[in-house]
Image (cartoon, rainbow, N blue to C red; front, side):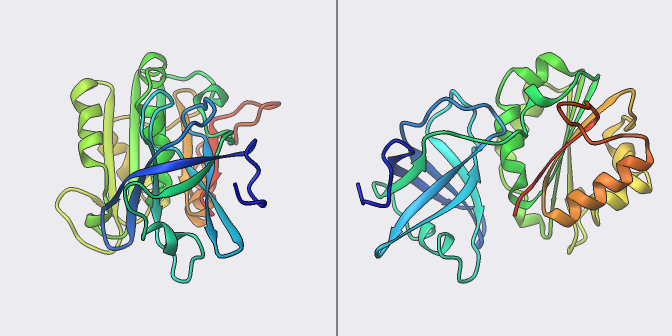
Length: 253
């Protein structure tokens, strides 16, 4: 390995597929000998760029027992890593950090009848990992997955989401949001506004309340902040280990 790459921290993986969802959204699938992780956690991907080793965090989309590993990302103009990731082909090497991190996991979430998973953009990734496991379906009576994007083409992973609906038709509800187009199936606008005016709960068929709900939020910081503030007006509070609450969050940059 390159002298900057610690083999105890990093393993060299092999790309199995680069899937383009749109001209900006991609899934990278990789075979790599990583340590066991918990659904909802993230790791880091790294590539050598000349003499420099470039690394960035990415959540696992695959369940812990599922292979290949999968990472969902958006290209960043001038991004030192994403502009290289999109050029990878099957068989190419990519480094993956062996040990995962992060607390956007169900073992951090208190008990409740209803689980809400609120995401924007690539923030849906860790929720897909969670939903591929047995735990949410065992623990919660109802599970609502919300995915907010700019255009309908960015609503990726539809086959995966439809498989959740097929397996858990009474438990699961998927609510898409599209902010920059009008569609006949998605809520128009942003998640916080649709909570404030009741549209989200109307579509999901259940209410958000401190007595009934646990809410996990992952996505852009503005959405996370604004949604958290709206939920606090309903009496929900941030979930912390020393002070359990109802809102578990992760900013995606």
